Length: 261
Length: 257
Image (tube, rainbow over all chains, first blue to last red; front, top):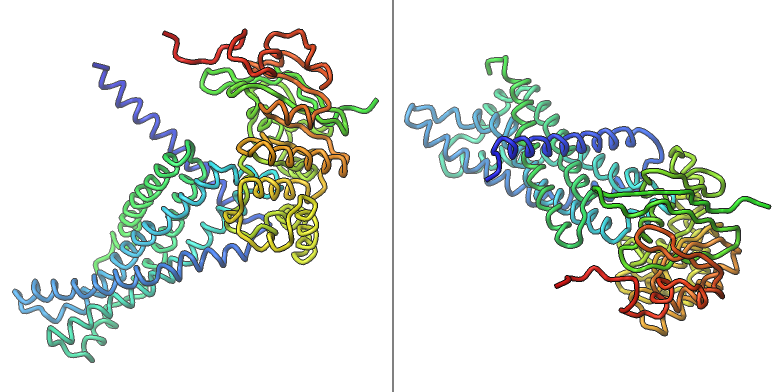
């Protein structure tokens, strides 16, 4: 039996080493993204892949979650005769938390994995080395477009998710729970503040950054053939999830921690 | 006397305490073709990656066109890489773009040519390696191994580089296709007057492509000489390798019981 402290120490050291490598990778991405050449065509292509193709899954998630949420709040609220809070709570919950977080997680599942698999395969088949020999910087050509596209696209996706989430609540509220459509919309608008929307968009942008960063990082450094690519894919999704959940909490505490309401 | 195009000076490289290269010296004169032979794990690929700047050796220096690739900045490295073409072992074609764009890639991205002009050159280079223009519209995954190699060769020569590297150019091909590739390599290199560095374990290929041959074993150059001299090297290791014998001084790291 080995010394347990040594094991803990080794785990912490390797975790810190990984974090350091990731940070320097992120710094590399950022520094490359402000220097030419910038591949606009590839950015557009990635925006299409990340954004448009994620619309169905993100939209559905938001719609159904908003609907379920409205039902639960109605059921819970009816105990205190507070059914009228449904629109307000739905819109706050969706825009502040569920829209960006669920949207981010869904896109991470789709996109981080795809990026890791694609870049990982390019790594193990020497396509990334080939790029270098053709005087093309793999960071600029492969990674910056992905990160840039994700940062720009995620807020748009989350905007759609927010609207559909609220709409899901609206559907259940008016069609099933008997709430008045006009006042539902009015309460929704009254409750929603500009800061809710801003924070939602900021979260989405940050999540987009981590989704593309984790996908690219794990793919770029993958090794060891098919198994390595498989591992990279899993690690990309898991680490993107963790990054999203942690940064979400941080942003929530910073933006809403001090205020009442 | 001009200085050599590629001058590898005393490079060493280890990974996690495992020494892969220890004090390798090699030089390739302008217009010359050097083939490095050696078994699996002898350090051939690592040598090539060091010369390309994909790996940094622990010590020593590598001069390519007079510039030390191990100490060079990004801007200068790009300038050196523009003079270099490379044929990868698995061809390493980009599977997200059609064949002609693969061939034209260095012209468009590296040299900044217009797409239409680059396509014209790409189709010309495809013809050079015996592929018809309609192959250019296919995706790399639709090609056979031999065709992929030829596209890889077309891509390597597209920008008419001064130096070309070949990584196991015949591996994974049938003997006839291997010979076709060897012939193409010889022809293309002669057309361009390029300096080449090849790593291979295929002796037939080495004999065809090389002007000079060097043998790498356990991270050291154990023999170097003109192609004509390889059959009278007087070196047991070389003898064993070129005859492909399991018996001799080179012992494979098999499980010894």
